[in-house]
Image 1 (cartoon, rainbow over the protein chains, first blue to last red):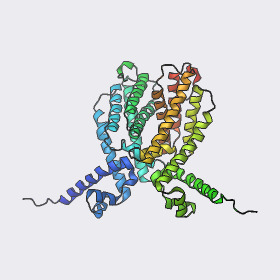
Image 2 (image 1 turned 60 degrees about the vertical axis):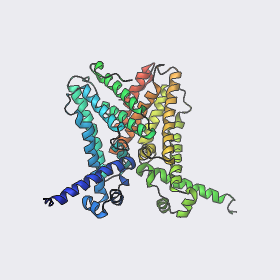
Image 3 (image 1 turned 45 degrees about the vertical axis):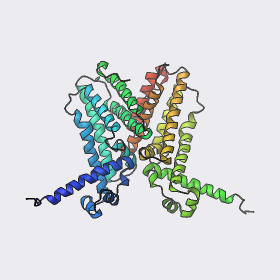
Image 4 (image 1 turned 180 degrees about the horizontal axis):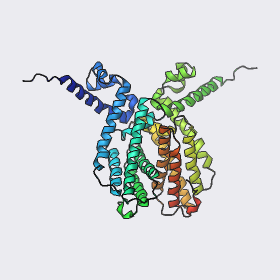
Amino acid sequence: MSTPRPDGRVERGNRTRRAVLDRTVGIASVEGLEALSVGRLATELGLSKSGVFALFGSKEELQLATVREAGRIFTERVIRPVTADPAGIARVWRLCEGWLEYSRGRVFPGGCFFYEVIAEFDARSGPVHDAVVRAQRDWSAYMERTLTEARDAGELRADVDVPQLAFELVALMETANGVAVLHGEETAYRRARVGIAARLRTAAVDPLRVPQVH
Amino acid sequence: MSTPRPDGRVERGNRTRRAVLDRTVGIASVEGLEALSVGRLATELGLSKSGVFALFGSKEELQLATVREAGRIFTERVIRPVTADPAGIARVWRLCEGWLEYSRGRVFPGGCFFYEVIAEFDARSGPVHDAVVRAQRDWSAYMERTLTEARDAGELRADVDVPQLAFELVALMETANGVAVLHGEETAYRRARVGIAARLRTAAVDPLRVPQVH
């Protein structure tokens, strides 16, 4: 028997939704969220425009769903691999390495998705801007929490300025992404690793816990 | 006598050109270079579309002229004020302070013009991408030269890795711009200054030459 189950339409809708978002995160990471249009996606994916509209309702909804999907992928690739690690410098290091690998491995074809859309939406206002701001805050907050836990575990010095250190580590990672994507070269990732290791050595109770990077 | 001089048409053309570019650098710093269109500029500035076309020829020419104009303004605001300073740490510091002030003072309404358009064009190809890459390389090279001269003047340690230090200073500045524009807050500029001072103290022959920043 192959009669469709009652939820066949919903399943098809979910599949289409995933196919659309798989494409939109890629487009947005290269061209920005403004490059997303229902018509273009329908054409590229061989779907009807009304079908895409039925799923997302508006261009803004499509942009917001794309930001959410990118956040899900980012969490999966960068955050989840370290969540079970014990607090400490090794975990901070693995988080930074994971981020650099997420950029270098082009999980999104245009490099870090958020680097792209933050520059696009930073000076605007509205729900998409707010979603992007939230994603950036969440990431900064996660980095700060990871550093705080390393400090509480006794591996970073008690007087370390955590928000300052988080700012500096994120600056090294994001700039590596920007330079590497722009110039198509890998040196920037090495520079970021050298810088991150130097920052962590200065902050560490035992500098020998920080990997040697050249 | 007020008969037009023979070059009256050329002068009018130059005035119009300046008016258009004054507007395009502002638009591009907020919305990106793709947001520039001959039609939109003609409407906003009360000019004829054919007049704007006669001056710029194509959207790509308009984008390229906009990148050149932004480069001219950047040089005027950030580079020129330090060119007469003697080589040394004070000059490096003034250069970084000038950059942060250029971002904080919103010389371009969307913050650093190049931060915006680099993210927009980094993963693309073509003449506009190439112009943006060149501008970014010029700025990195200028920062490296300023650091090399400070080292040659005996103020930075002989073993300082200049490209690494330049990368780290630029990372702090650009991230401050990104975070400040995104969240509409000023803390990021203070963090950048604290980080820059710390990097220069580590690299300095005499750390007391670096300003105290809190």
